[in-house]
Length: 130
Image (tube, rainbow, N blue to C red; front, top):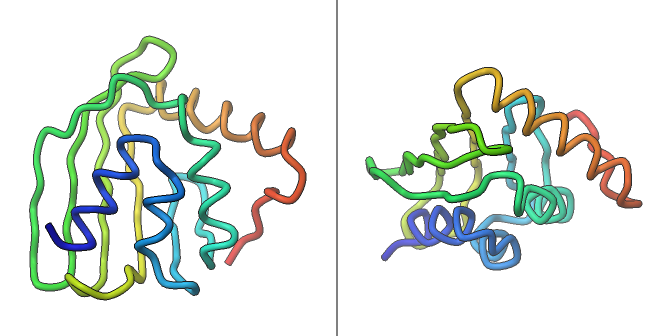
């Protein structure tokens, strides 16, 4: 298994520390709302995501020479959601960029609202735009 696939599996399993261990210190995470730069900003965000997306099941993986996309199904507040986690970087080098895409709009909006609530409750994790 390469680093990109390992990151996808760790992220979907809710293991934010393991997922963050695969990214470069200056990596970028593109959420449905904004982009964040740096592992010190990304790992707390990923920790906050834990539990918002539930019943996650990887349904497919597409890979190329410098990117891998993991397609998944799950739920947000009991509503079905689909997503893609696109991971860019070398197979055996730290990941440079991760993009999370979610659909449909209703459950995605609920997930964004819950993330906002969690981030305002945790000191030091307020997002900065990159």
